[in-house]
Length: 351
Image 1: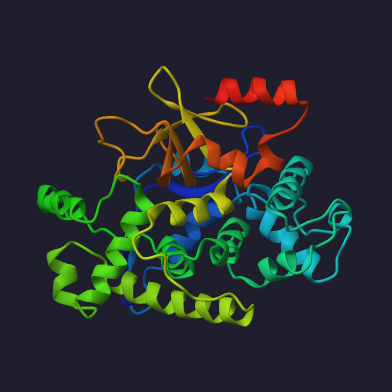
Image 2: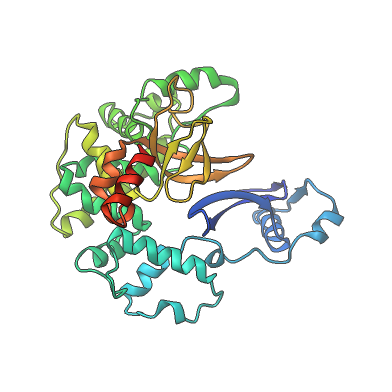
């Protein structure tokens, strides 16, 4: 790439899973010495270069020698799914090079069981579990795609999942922030970020994948082209599994329900204090400033999210508005336990 100069701020953004809250978030932490050396190595590969570190040598010596292995700090559901597909049934006794915390493994198993990928004997279900393992995606996205045929919205589900794999679809130059925000509002809808991304993709195709149109609307042209490639790959997998590729046209609720089928575990309810709390653990979360729901006059009561970013607060990203009854309708095994009286009490608290 011809990089000659590197400016190292001394921080890195990494995914980290909190088993107590059940939330996986992107956190900003000081980089390790190994990470700093790797960054410096990117300068001068073509010719002599320099790395400028925005911290003192004394601070560098205080940094940890190595970064914590990703295996020890992320949600283990995707790893467990792949191990099960390879025929390794006793995943808790598997000899990992960097053994993850036991609680992370338990949370991963619980999520896969809730998604229907594992049965009561902790075996992959057929065909759902085996099919989920074939997708090069996190388990929640795979479940969403495989459920799309039930709602008749596989076209929209494919587009949304492909768009979710792209970073920074909207480009916001510092000198044109007002114009960029105005352009983003053209695609925004009250249903949330997922349907907004669907609108962006449809408009991109409508204007024949025009690079100039992307520039005028502050959109990431290369990212959108990549989304088309990802969508085609996922479409081939759905066809392989015999799922009909069809569109629900303008039925946004079918798309919202389909998303809920995959992400019912990532739901939050508006608290009377004005912030959101996760349904399962009551963990406090906030809407990310880049979300189309950030500046709405009346915040929605029930939402689901794809991921959490941890900066000054914990912010939810990629959000969709949902209805509370969908959770009982689509994931009763996850939200309904106990006697009828207990269920009625839970419903009363939630509603």
